Length: 184
Image (cartoon, rainbow, N blue to C red; front, side, top):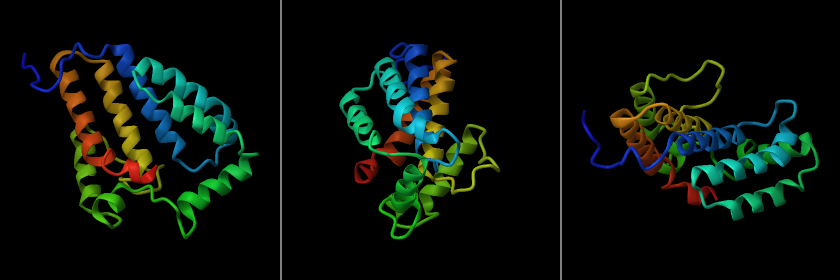
């Protein structure tokens, strides 16, 4: 069996990988429009506590940031206020923040980064759901894909795990870590 020159497959146990998958899946959902019933409750009360829990298991050192988020979220009065804040940041012109990777990496919507992400998705047998009415480079889609890579790694071992972790690292390096500081 081949070994990875990049990763030790023993470095992360399945529980750590599963926590990382859960962490990124939660973040993915947090960047979707908060239109479902209970979104306010989830955003203000459930998400901060669950992020704390999976961050500890996943080995992330972000408890201060989660505390800052929880403190800010506590000031969001209700579902309507949450939707208004979300719309002001991400939907209504003038948007304060773009949620599409290509805008930051290529300077345009549907840039070459969007195409590269679609190739990356197909490599892992994925296609955009008909229920997702946004572009393939939307932050929620990229974060969900990262969660999937970690979830699959948690369920595998040996070379498949190393390959999945290598792809997760590449996804993070090329499509997230370069522009997320600008988003913050």
